[in-house]
Length: 99
Image 1: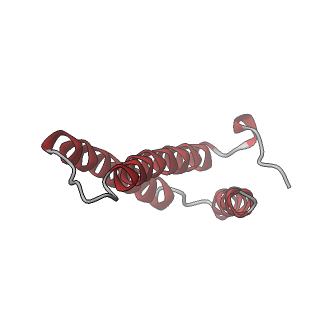
Image 2: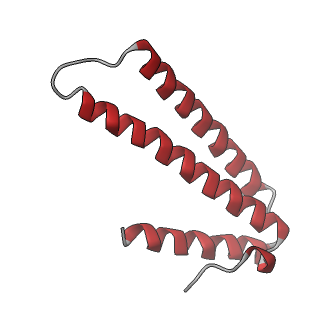
Image 3: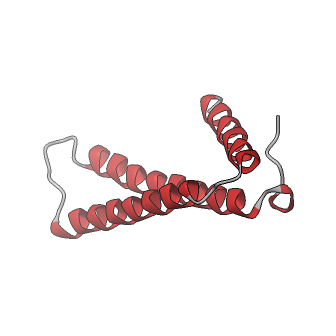
């Protein structure tokens, strides 16, 4: 199953889907930096102040995106729109499992 295009989505579903994608992107940014720092400092070093601040900023950004997603989901009142989002999230989960 492929995800429907934005024009086919209920506006509330489209907003929640966009919020979900943004949340995933912010999570990926945070974990990418965390992984890079882990590799960099496996030999016993420690991250500097700038790196810790960057991590803190990325985590804060992700927290903000999670809240936006939760608000967008809560704003969906139509059962059909909720079902659209569920289907999109299933497709997204299936695609992640393949990677």
